[in-house]
Length: 236
Ligand SMILES: *Cc1c(COP(=O)(O)O)cnc(C)c1O
Image 1 (cartoon, rainbow, N blue to C red):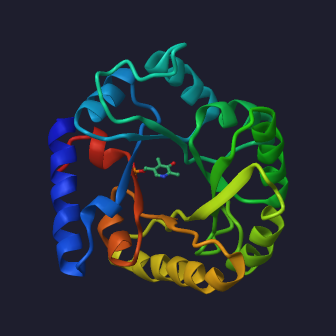
Image 2 (image 1 turned 90 degrees about the vertical axis):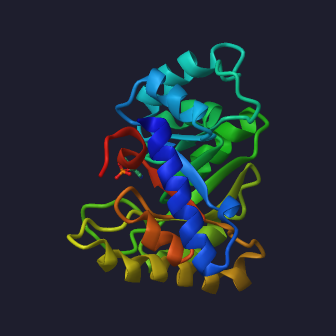
């Protein structure tokens, strides 16, 4: 089932990209595997996915050790390296473990958290790639910076030598009709585009779009979609 889901998703992405005159290879799929077993994750990897995302450090840690073992190499026979992503809210006291495991942390929503990540990354001699999470719909129940705070916060983060801000991430509000998410995705892309001149950094990654709205997110400029149910559950 997972393999079929992945095939169907890739086909959809190709159709959308063909219409947009874009290269489908530019769209990264992060398989968000919270609540899924290591076996399911391996199925996703065997279906060709190379980006695995988790939303809790503790759960990620257990699976990471099973998946990568002490060798830190995936136990699956896959020639492509597996990249591990943190997509959920990150608490300061979990930063140390997070920096050891994750190639990209999508959910950085304060300069204070970035400072902590910078500190731990420095100890490991690592440049930690991060995304800045934006609460684009200004939902009081969601994490993320308000759009107005983003420019100033990225400026503060630019002083940290062991982190690199690679782009922006958002979680769209839950809506009845996925079409209603379009304006939020567009806002995030515009926010990123307007930041370009001040950051000297292209902020190449826009992490937006989940199982119900990834098609719209891609149409609005997403190049990293985070899919859970679309990959791991029976659809259609
Ligand atoms: C769970 C989760 C996803 C995936 O959600 P689906 O709707 O199952 O695709 C994406 N991003 C974050 C931050 C998540 O926690």
